[in-house]
Image (cartoon, rainbow, N blue to C red; front, side, top):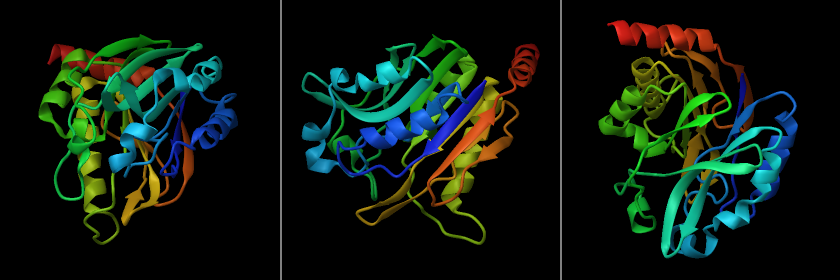
Length: 253
């Protein structure tokens, strides 16, 4: 199984269809799944424009068509009746298979998401063509409750889409990168799953996003890593046998 991490820099608007379609067509013959960052269809700092810019699910039908050749995970502000969610959506074989609404909305410092989005209240797994899947959005994974639920369900694949701004500049790497790597590796080890982390790049209203999207195996080791601060496309091949061994060890400990 091959996965592609599309580390893009979305526009702060609804005008992101072309960048998604171009990335999908670029890898549709060589990858099985392509993953985009959090809010890849909208940009991050939506604020008061969120209600106008959020998508009805029917407006995302392009991805149903494109998913006939490759499974697709996008991030979008979605509208359900009067509620707006920060969502991860999984398309496969011509249909929307699953949608996850971000459970944990940060509302501190530079973050004001709980002012503009409704919280999701479920975290579920689902079956894909490539095994059992769970999806989370950025701050979700900073919750021990969420990590515990992933560890309990033991999926084969965990997709983490993010908009993580640069913070804590040090020598050689960012502090926020080190923290993310620990969280992602812990999740992989406890669940026995491959963890795919897709973070965006670019700038919005003074926020700079660092990228460094990663594929982490079930032993918590980073197998593939994208560039920092630059658009990039990373393609990795997953070793499902490694994941099976890790799950066996978790069952017998």
